Length: 224
Image (cartoon, rainbow, N blue to C red):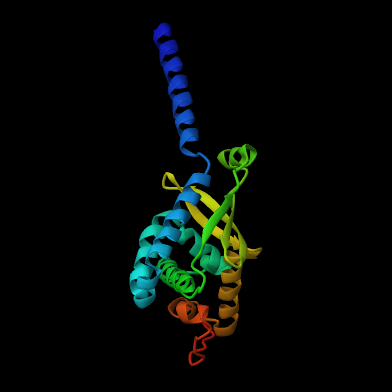
């Protein structure tokens, strides 16, 4: 019996080591994933820009198809809601997550289509340091930054993607463009809307209009 226990113990150790190694192999650098997604989206845009400018709905649908699997919209939406997510009902969080996703995809696609300059190329993608990945694997860091430079005919834009590993793949959690933290911008906008309307459901219902600064003032409630 003692020998059997030793074999069982050894087997458990080996299985644990194998499963730990497999987990570490899954969480590799997000650098290639970020570059692949960006290149595919830019190629789609540049190859069909004239067609999409005549039919922006088609481009919005294509951006949604390409980006949705690689963006942590639920996590981003909770971050945008900030402290108000703690008082929100499950249905409100789910509604805002969908509304936020749809409005962000539409905003991003239309912004691309409004660019006169369609010459967008990836100039450089910085390698993620091993120390950064090790911190993430060990739980010391919540996000992994991937820095990139995109070149246009008028200059170079510095972009930093904040990535998180969810559902066995890397997903975008935030983005910083030329030093402007988009996640913080949206969180501030949500907080300002809550201060203005003091009504969580109203802000959730009217988020697309709030994003564009077009929300009405007809409904101001003292209930949150």
